[in-house]
Length: 456
Image (cartoon, rainbow, N blue to C red; front, side):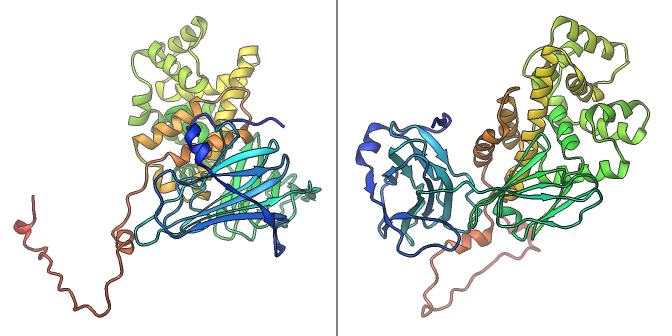
């Protein structure tokens, strides 16, 4: 079995591998009702450990499935698995899913039999130095036969997911899939119109959904209408994925307009529909778009091509698009979307490659926004630094990128988003509880009415 390394993460050095404490598996004493674990091993400590002293070695069997749980005073920074050479090959970026103080890396399939290393990523505190690393193994994973669910020719308002691997095809009409769990219980990936929902824990089912317009979770609803077109607008004009609130806002606006869902059809409405023109202009004349695309018309077209297609245009393409802007046949505001629409409709060899890249960018942008919501990281996607992280992610795509495999890079990018400033209440929770027998402390504040007493 082949496997990929995560080149963006540093490798273990020889000293770390030499000093790694070996963890030995023993049979599971009590079977789990929701997972077929055969073996387990764990490490626990109640003392402060030096930074970096969280690397362990374990022996795994090719094809076996391993679940790794790390726990410390604060959410572990990241669980990482390394191969026998110290190359990072798996990492957990979903740090907020399973509750405070814990991180899980589930469903790691060993690509070979032999030694692996794991970094627990513990974050200790003086008040709570306790740390735990727990690994379980399923030595005989069984490939489940999918549970096929087909919708009716009309609207299906309640197709309910089971604990099995459901393969759902809603067919015609507006179809809604319902899950009894919250959105955060799943990883959600869109690839060429097909949605893959992977349960993070529990039964760990993998559901494949086709022709589904609405996903209803126990805590939120995701409407797939206009997801692609909304993301196309963000990719075209900002070079990045939409934020959660922005995606929902433009979905609602496009629904109210009764807009066509295709990029080409929507762009063509620019000249005849004042409402569509106003919406596109709001993107094209924004300060963020101006910062991405500037200079004269030829420089502008070059910048659009680099953002959308990762290349500069040929001379004929440059002359065509810049000439259209020069002549007033095309406005700068509508140029980015028009160039994207042209790439999607081009049937030449280069055109087909460009179209595949554009579709990949739109799908990955969608998956980035979905992950912001499932990982409760939407507040971190704010500001220029966060926008640059998302923009860099999309620029790393190619026409032949495997979207499902690329989801690890999406998670990595979200893990790099700037931390959200902690509130006063969160800081207060870190303080050592006061001695109940101590005398009360008198807190003296400043009267807000006397502004002259406030420090400058």
